[in-house]
Image 1 (cartoon, rainbow, N blue to C red):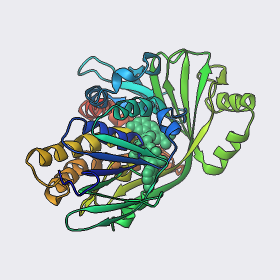
Image 2 (cartoon, protein in one colour):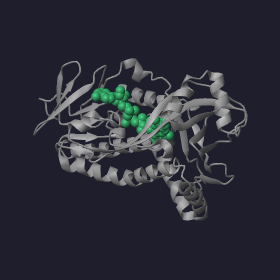
Image 3 (cartoon, rainbow, N blue to C red):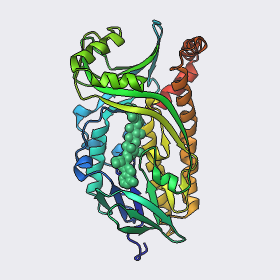
Image 4 (spheres, rainbow, N blue to C red):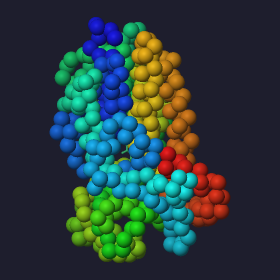
Amino acid sequence: MAAALDADLVIAGAGPAGLSLAAALSGAPLRLLLFERAKLSEIAEPRFDGREIALTQASMRSLRKLGAWHRIKPSDISPLTRARVLNGESEFALYFSNRRRGEALGALVPNAAIRRALFDVVSEQANCTIITDQAVISLQSGEKSIAALVSGGRCFAAHLAIAADTRFSPLRQSQGISAHMIDFGRSMLVCRMTHAIPHQGIATEWFDRGQTVAMLPLQDGMSSFVLTLPARQVEMLLEMSPEAFAAEAQRRTLGKWGAMSLASTRHAYPLVAVYADRFVAPRFAVVGDAAVGMHPVTAHGYNFGLASAMTLAGELRRSAREGGDIGRLPGLLRYQRMHRRATWPLFLATNAIARLYSDERLLSRIARSAGLRLMRAAIPLRRAVEARLSG
Ligand SMILES: Cc1cc2nc3c(=O)[nH]c(=O)nc-3n(C[C@H](O)[C@H](O)[C@H](O)COP(=O)(O)OP(=O)(O)OC[C@H]3O[C@@H](n4cnc5c(N)ncnc54)[C@H](O)[C@@H]3O)c2cc1C
């Protein structure tokens, strides 16, 4: 577009969201510069980080469209056929499945496999240059362009800059965008476990007293074990030997999955939810966790991140097609409106669920038991949740 500029678009962060945005702009008449502070090897061959991402059917369709889905090994794709919610010691279970379409709710794919597939797509893309080992450290927006200063000392001018730089996004803050942040004061420990009693393709979310356990069904008789506890307890579990940890996991799950053993490295993540008060500023927008950083309990973080990339890319393609300036606010504001509408209700509902199910007071315990029974009785409500889960 403008020869004087280094690019049309500068993206800070080649995580799943930044890569998705770049891939969604493949073939558009736009030149992209994608900066990543990590080394090339870390994003080209990302290591297992414990996260198994529950993708909705809608996200799977988007990844197909981006050319990333077929690059994921079949052994990395575990279909999610049913989900059940358990509460404390109660025998009562609430089940979800995708009855409407008769297909799986979605699929579980390791975060590292998604990142690798997206990296492969973008690295072959003619209109995108990936620059690794370089962080975008500041942005200066002007009337016709925005300048990105990177850690190597160079400055790159573009029509628009995008921050895909994690939920704590210093770039978002630097553009005067505040964010609503909730620190749940807990951490989530994630790892793979093998277990004697098969999971039968059912994902379990179990809101137990003092802990939340999720068992997400993977291939080869394995599950992703996801345990939410106060941060100090998680630290202690990380320090245990694999054998002691497996025994502790079996004790905490009351033997529901039989004998367990550790099948991967263990990883911990602090639970902080973030919602940016705005998604755009002059010549600037946020995508992925930098826009909406979800509590993982409803498994929507990357699903929303991918949706943000697809929506924004649609607006940028439209501006480029009309020969306009992609950094102009009207197109960016349309993206903001659409993405807020798609995410705000579930952001609020997710935080309410996370709070209610980690509150040990008697009233909360009564409320959550009543909530699950009500949901089973209220079939339209359950169908709405099922539609939401499958996207
Ligand atoms: C335990 C756990 C389970 C989850 N489960 C699910 C699930 O089931 N379903 C789901 O949809 N989501 C899930 N999520 C959420 C999902 O992992 C995140 O939403 C997703 O990784 C966010 O991607 P992102 O690209 O926005 O940010 P990140 O993954 O944080 O990536 C940001 C990238 O930007 C780079 N970077 C940062 N600053 C700069 C800078 N200044 N310049 C250049 N590069 C920079 C970083 O190095 C990094 O590569 C889960 C999260 C956790 C923690």
